[in-house]
Image (tube, rainbow, N blue to C red):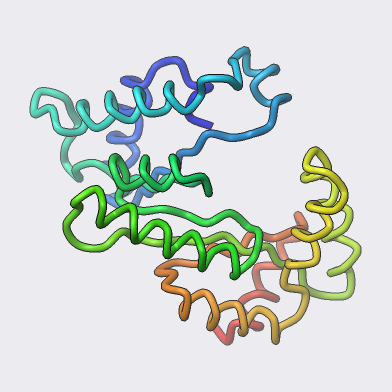
Length: 213
């Protein structure tokens, strides 16, 4: 949640440093966030966060293009923005290198990818945006149990119905993992991030096996 950060210049320079240290491998993802409790704990205001983010992104881009600011060994990182509102697509087209869909399933991702493409063209941007998506998964004997314990809890603030839809959309078997790889690619997704719904490190191996890696 970028609007909770009070110093856009510091964030921009930190990102440049990490990108240089990583050999140009950093992708910086920023978004608004929508949880009131996050803003309360962080000492920020939920209202007006869109305008604050726009101002921050302008500052960040200014820093990244300033020849007097370093380190510039690797240049600026890729900047990916999230959000599913019209203003979010316009913001990503104006400031970002691409956009990421939330973990609410391939259908919503497809709609977002199409909307992002339209916003990109309307902004007069050259080339194509880098399009990403998040997909939840939980594999193994505790798949259903872990999804309900973690995703239902995390998204409880959205209400039981929406939280249940997100939990139901998590990949819980190898066939669904493979299907998601196909349907997200067909939707135009360039990069799909599988996010585990369990802290068990074995989930990494289970996912690799399911994806045939």
